Length: 156
Image 1 (cartoon, rainbow, N blue to C red):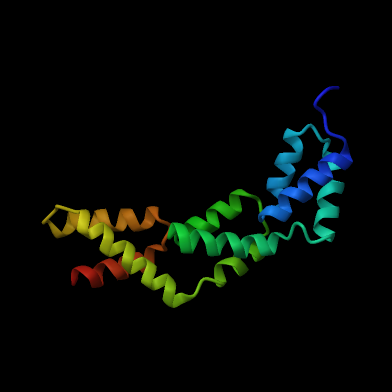
Image 2: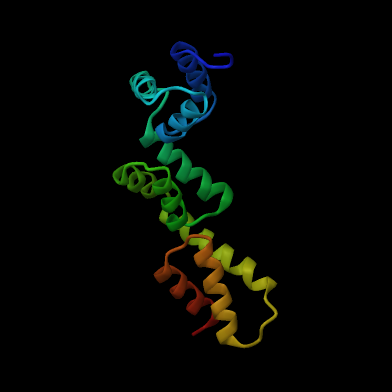
């Protein structure tokens, strides 16, 4: 059939993708499926790419957590949800999240809080607190950290 890739072509394409940037096994499996590769062939391709260190889900979790924290300023909850959505191992996810420095994490939370506060026009403390909490939760920060930070910020 025209346009179908052979197993060797798919392996080469997937290896090329993985050498250009970090991918997890789930993302490569989806690519292989979209290229018309059977599940059995996809399993063997992923196994080979993993054995040759093109794919490393643990390395992917660490890189993903680092990038989403540093560049998107996401909290650990949101990063963890996205990694779980990719069906990655919970232990590898936990390792990736543990690599985020606590001090930098707290500073990111405080900066997101200050930025959002500047945009609010509410004078009512209750409404202001609710909007700040909702915003920080949507950014993926943990509820306990958010409540403590907002209370301290508002002097409650």
